[in-house]
Length: 173
Image (cartoon, helix red, strand yellow):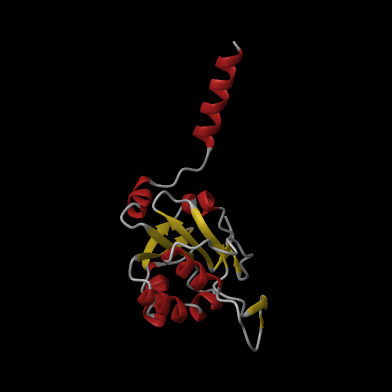
């Protein structure tokens, strides 16, 4: 009786958990590592960060760069305008029902995730330390968290820190 109750509880928890779309998991398996950028076309930081992300894209050709747009708030024209305006080289991934965002507990745009092909999070958070808070930029920044994580991963070193608190626009579910 006790074992069957536990089994039922496990089935219920598993069936209620947010599952990423299978196509997305298949996309992840195409590369040893992927960089996810949760973005919004009208988020000023997402526009600002497109240039350094493109530089990382060019520096780490073995990493798959994916721009995840969660929700269905933006028109196709708004999304196309963002990519034309920024020249972002990441592949667009639509997440209309927030399943991808929820599976990673993404809460900010832009928020970055370096993950392996099994969707294990190796790094989550900021691009760098140029922001003190929303709208407050540092004159000089010294920590390049995402680049350091990519380099550490490439050379088989431990990633530190593995998480920083992203600063930006709230990703509303």
